[in-house]
Length: 287
Image 1 (cartoon, rainbow, N blue to C red):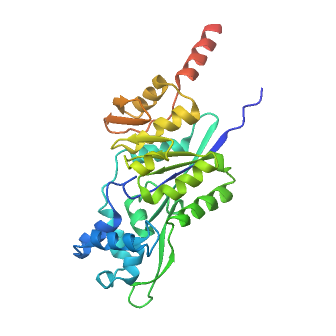
Image 2 (spheres, rainbow, N blue to C red; image 1 turned 120 degrees about the vertical axis):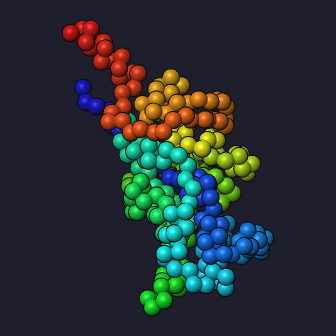
């Protein structure tokens, strides 16, 4: 009997305060000695001058305090980012996939591309990262212009481009985000029967996201994916986590999953689900 065709899903994650705990703009500001970054962002937000999420790109290009920012400053800010635990395990699991399920993982964020690439170096390939792109002055190396900002509807466009390039239908797009700058893209994904996950208790996002997971571990976003998309039960999910040397120490099952994971993730050579183990044992018994 021919194997059932696999289902191919696009998994997209924001970066700032989703894979990281920080705001890239705050890290860069601290690096440059700029003390009023938050006030600058709030001022831009109240004026509706730029799309939400694109404030840092605007400041780098137009604010005198950010004049002189070069590629190396952005890369250094990325190296200083505090990341959620178990990102390598999450990426490895999604790359490996499951029987009948294939996942393509990408990061789309309004954070500068150099920041994200430096922060996730060795974990997420550069061509799987879509961030704000700048043009640099060939002589000074300073930011000269903005080429692209995937914020607001720009993030929606980036998701659609990936769907088209990978040949993935919109109902198989999964988006993970943390805040109000993710509202447009989450509404877009929901409207086309995709799946959305929030990783913060942002009230606006909580009303839009189909699932919310609160945890310090990036691996925790697999819980709603495995439950709602793959159809696994709690025991199977716990066993998967244990195969990565992670234990679901606390799991408050609700529309918001509160998760505490204990241990350091270990990437295993093969995943065997309880269902597959049972089938194997049955075959041994027949033999």
